[in-house]
Image 1 (cartoon, rainbow, N blue to C red):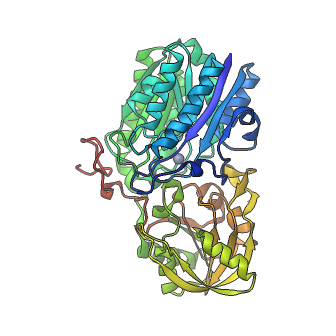
Image 2 (cartoon, rainbow, N blue to C red):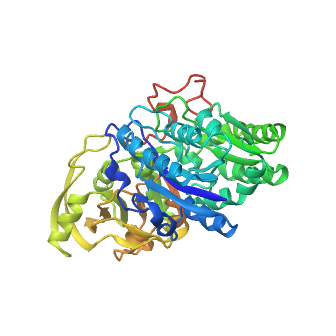
Image 3 (cartoon, protein in one colour):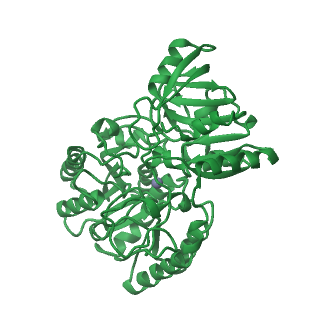
Length: 495
Ligand SMILES: [Zn+2]
């Protein structure tokens, strides 16, 4: 078959006031920038992304790929309406020109624009209107998708990642391609079922390396193997104040009865796990620091603090200073902190050069939560252009661009700043500067979970810590105004 392939991805933190402009979709960072036309067929091959996996497997199966466009921006505030319309118009125009037999789209599932809460639902509905009811429209989704009925009604088939950290991003595209022939055989509108869970799941509790998600994804695989029903379990993206935010289970198969039963089994298991989702709720900042140093005193490897509320992967600015202030305050030694999005500091360090001591102000422009300016002297230990090859299971082998970067030393604290906002997905964000991560007692990372893929083997343990930031961990305190009623804001709560 002739399959049109493209993508448009954003995870929107609706609590971040600044809208997301086109430039952010055009920026190359840990992933490529906006790409349209024939380059789509070649540029993504080294990347752990779904479109690369889909194309490789679908081509092997004898299908022909027709390139659309693909773009991704780091999680941030609502996508500008004009940006959404621009990206969607490219996709629709290219699908119309290609007149394909089927469409594959790499989507996130938690995109919100200035005026559209369910951007993927809107995109998929427009694609469906264009191609008509008989053309299969299949899609990959991020594990953090806030899946909606409109998405389920419009697409023929969707499959979400099953790992957080997202080490199966590529495999999810492969999986869509592997199921593609079955989806076509099920007919133009396969049987499907969709369930929204009755409680919200805090973001750090969605990690698939720990319970209960680890066991739930294992169960998903078992039910799938037993029944032939394709399943996805999405814990949702909580920093989105929209009606349909939350955890969902979706399924596709040959018969409605089978699909309903399989989705029902998995949904029931999620509900039975409700109490276990509370175990990984973040500890308050100072408690997290004290606990980390207590553990480090007994450990032979570093203890990692996840600065989860300033996770850029959930829309955090990566400039909050809560943990830095706490570390300076206690005169911390043997401590590493990464990754601060401070382009001005990185440039000042480069201008001053290795060995220089400079005065720097963190969060100088800060307006958001936790962005309290902090001025201090710092020694420049090393600088780089921030270009290196990623390591570990999530971004290993990918070319990564952190922009001008620097390794700074503030007393006993080593700290890495970069110029392109992104998570410390892999240890190479530090090691490429010459840092040996093994020698530290405590390492503070601006990430919720993704770091675990590459960093955790080097660590004694992880403490999830809550310092003021834009990506609130405890869903029970997120100030939702648009969320549907009758969903428990925190697991095991009454409301
Ligand atoms: Zn995600």
